[in-house]
Length: 369
Image (cartoon, rainbow, N blue to C red):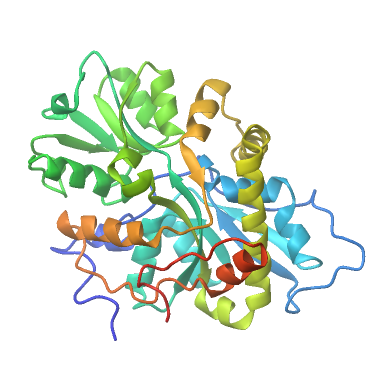
């Protein structure tokens, strides 16, 4: 059965099919592949599932802090034993999905939007979401000289990272709920939406070409460092202040053929999240160290500290919020209603959590069974 009822996007929005629809806005600031050469393999360790390596993808970005910390602390390598943990970093969701589909990576940390897009475009055959990683970390930051209240946003220029991406959809939905009309493709209307890469948005904000931005961390904190003011934290719009910003995905074939390797990576992820939540200051520095290794530049304390505080690390994929985010994209006119049944397979994660004495997590009716 097809995963969607009609072509993913309406009215010839091929650019969204090809790249950005539901692409993660929390883009990193570089792209590279490498090895965890510092991790030590325990004496006598054996290969898992007979694999020489497991290829792991993520963004060099704070919302991917689980992967950053897991790599920097050597947790993935420790759980994988003599099977090498190989890494590749990405700065856009579509390129990571492409790498997953081509077999260049096996498992990846990625946002909800490219996961939805990758799943629906493949008619439900390319990937599974196997765990959660992070919630929150998205804010509306404005120039306080131009915008002093939420109603002042009307008539202004607000940046989002990419046409149809997670934050773009969230802003369009928020504006629609206030009764404002915006054409989703052009961004023109009661508010002018300026699609601007996270790398250049601080320059646009500094120059005054935009009045504010609905962006993820650390871009939001970079804007605050430039004199911006947080007008709205997106988490305040969600039940329990929780919504998914980063998931763990896997190639379906890899999940079927190498469940023990998937289990090892999920064990490391759970361990990383526990350590992050128990040791936030140490974890913050570990994440920043790996970020510097990956992107060539660490974040200054003025950006790192507030950005890190706004991201919540969790093993729960917060599946209900993924369904809501897809509904927002449909409402905005950017996506035909997708069939997301089967996008989650949380079987191995729940086995790991049970072994740790933790509660199982739920797929909100979108699981494989």
